[in-house]
Image (cartoon, rainbow, N blue to C red; front, top):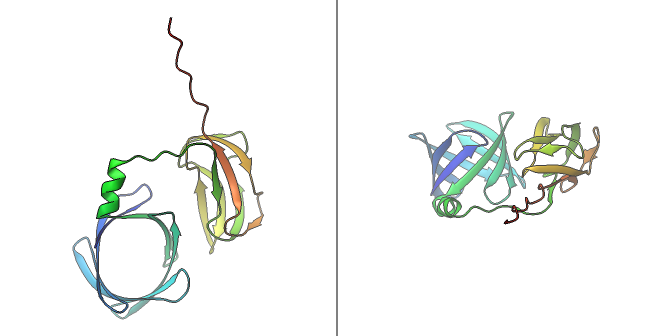
Length: 179
């Protein structure tokens, strides 16, 4: 199966994945094909063996097509779309409405509040810095709007699913009255 994979703000690359047998896969990226053994060793942890080298990879799903991937000490925020999902995504633009609650995807410690209550933010702008798995993660606003609630304070430890903040979209602009 072919996937279009992109890192947040980065280029999109085609990755082809073929299952060869139990825990064995052929992966093609940028014309380079490798065979790997991939075994799940925890809820989100995978052990990968490629050409005699072993890697531990932590994969945390972020919605339908998003993934946070920690490999070799590097955290990647990836989006992966198969051919069908890519076709659907290009034909439909889903827009969130109303207040958007942003929750911690995993346990961590709030390192910094970047945007406080009442602060206008743009989609993708950082609101909270959360340290998880010894990595600092910028948690961003899912929409343009105003931060209306903070569920955390700097230095606080949070569990997965804890409310971090709420962003409300700006009020709808009324159409000018006809004269």
